[in-house]
Length: 131
Ligand SMILES: NC(=O)c1ccc[n+]([C@@H]2O[C@H](COP(=O)([O-])OP(=O)(O)OC[C@H]3O[C@@H](n4cnc5c(N)ncnc54)[C@H](OP(=O)(O)O)[C@@H]3O)[C@@H](O)[C@H]2O)c1
Image (cartoon, rainbow, N blue to C red; front, side, top):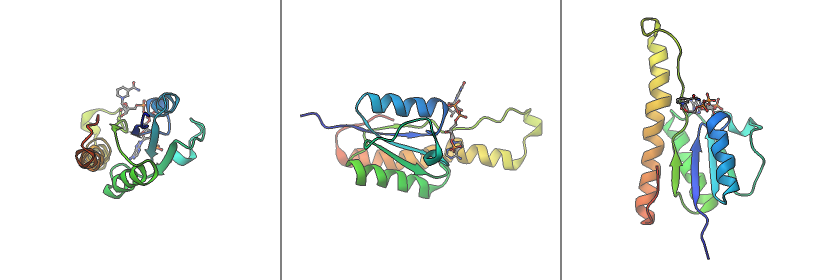
């Protein structure tokens, strides 16, 4: 018997992230999809193998809820796609500190919060995993 693997996809409400959610579902994975407004997304169909978690990836509390959802609903975390990210198309000299803080929160802190949660779980599972 093959046990289903569970993957977490961040930035899942649209674009590349939504495409990954659909691809993983089609290939038989359990998926936890997260973004600020992923539950309002119309980019994928409901599935009993898909869990949606709304939240800002820069908040540590979001990472904790995402990891908890994967474990409670599907029993493991086997892969993580750190896809959430923003790009501010403005000249460097026009960057405000608020811009920089938003970039750091979303593109760096979000990666750290969730990847720590996920790797801790993978180490406890002792079955490897992919980030
Ligand atoms: N497309 C490209 O050509 C390209 C090139 C190089 C790198 N990338 C990178 O690849 C990734 C995906 O690109 P994309 O074009 O598919 O991006 P996109 O269409 O702009 O989608 C970004 C995703 O990130 C989520 N997101 C943004 N801020 C967030 C936050 N604070 N907390 C949680 N989720 C947040 C958005 O959902 P919500 O609004 O619901 O939060 C959305 O699902 C990004 O990291 C991007 O920088 C893309």
